Image (cartoon, rainbow, N blue to C red; front, side, top):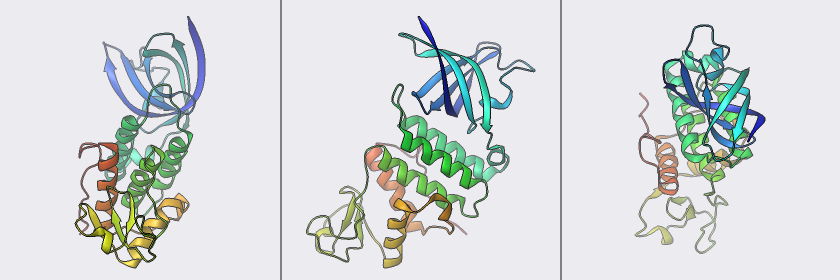
Length: 243
């Protein structure tokens, strides 16, 4: 039996299928990650048009079949194309990284509204941002938290409760004082400004992230995500130094 499903979604990736079709991997708001067969999508004048471009936000109608992992796409109507992100090499690279990490974090049949909404907010902000790398770092930081690994960022040592802790332990997932960071691997020693920025990254509106992050914070975020998500550099590439 099959059921007709309508859901908003984001195109994570596509791949060719046979001579004229595509398989689109879509993160849907309703049913999590799905693989959709778009018959004839590679033919000139296909009804799917640009609706299957990476990063496109759309409304998808598809046939869900029991005991099948590949479902049939009926239509893909664009809600927001994010075309400008694909036209700029820098934002295209960041878009591809975000979509790849989403594919890793999302699961079939398991919706994650928080992660979905975060992605929309970041993609929308990327279209006009003058600090795209910072938005990507924010996405990695918050996506890790929304995937079950929220850091402790209450500015006190998570071991003894001492205030003014500014060292961040990747493995323990929070701030530790000087005493309890001794001998600890993967500890980042931050200054007060970096600590405050890290706290702000966790709860500030996405559109308010304006400036670049220090290389220390970028490395911290990537190491934290890699450690807790068991992700390698293909998913979370090392930070690229700014000139």
